[in-house]
Image 1 (cartoon, helix red, strand yellow):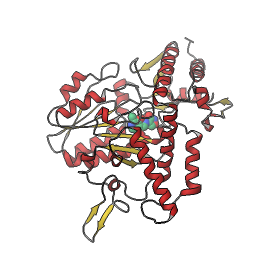
Image 2 (tube, rainbow, N blue to C red):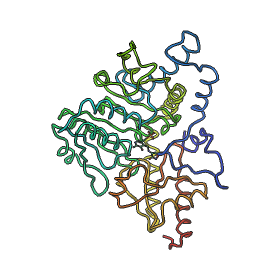
Image 3 (cartoon, protein in one colour):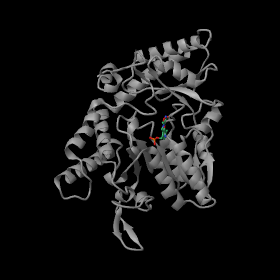
Image 4 (tube, helix red, strand yellow):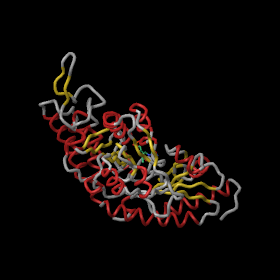
Length: 407
Ligand code: 7TS
């Protein structure tokens, strides 16, 4: 199936916006959903909806089977060794907060170090700031090279025997940098630290194997990979999860409750307090089926080709600044002369083209780039060369609109 055929499986893309056929270039913020995912959620609510893990009635068993079946799909998708290593969360943010609030606070103390990079999304930065403050640990940063990449020789220097946690995004949502997380995990382990990977921008776009990466925790969101909003995943190695305390308490997660003391269920349930996001998990399972049917290798190949095309076409525009390395994942962050990125996005929107403008939840990285904000076009399996051509044409018109010479 080519991208034009895949596009037809996404009902939302078949519409005009402001009088123009929609070009959606904001999948790094949230992807669109194929009909099969929308149908799976509808089917669940129309036929199987009930609470899980409690009822003896038939709908309760069906809902439980659907929810636990989705967990098995996720485990297979990222090649986790065990299904119980998959915890359903609200998204990447909740997953990373769980590691920082539970694992880091139990395992870090004064004198210890937490190592991250300046390219992290706020979701993989603030939880570590807070954990460092709460434990007295020091937050350390791996420096960025001029193109936004990191050097393993710097990683070797920054990680020490005092380091307890290393956390890093696999793919940057601004620079498109693909970090060498497998090699960093190996360095972290040599010093007795755990490796946390923010997989929000990698999981939707490439084959991920958590056993091969040998990371200790891996977080991602369903809504960026054709699934619904409100569902995400924290993968954690069983031996680590077994020694972690829950951070949310209530129904579903307990074993015995007394008036003054309580005990917790086994993993993963002890981390899933309250009625879980059942329909979200069902939708995520359907999204995984969809992505696997097309093939993660095929998706990666398509995005690689389209990104190369976008980089080539966009760099032809005079006055454009493109941030990040040449070798990158499927997104291009840029500024067009000194036109404010919000103005760029507004003019493009009038032509039916959706891009993101702002700091992309990466304020420290924006300061490093010496840009208060940037524009970003992000690609996915349903984007075509025609979409890129429309973007380029739109940007040239934007320049004209703001009175710049045309490149
Ligand atoms: N980590 C990275 C690398 C991200 O790109 C995002 C979301 C998150 C974490 C948080 O994910 P959430 O699902 O919990 O919100 N990134 C973006 C973005 O680039 N534009 O909007 C959201």
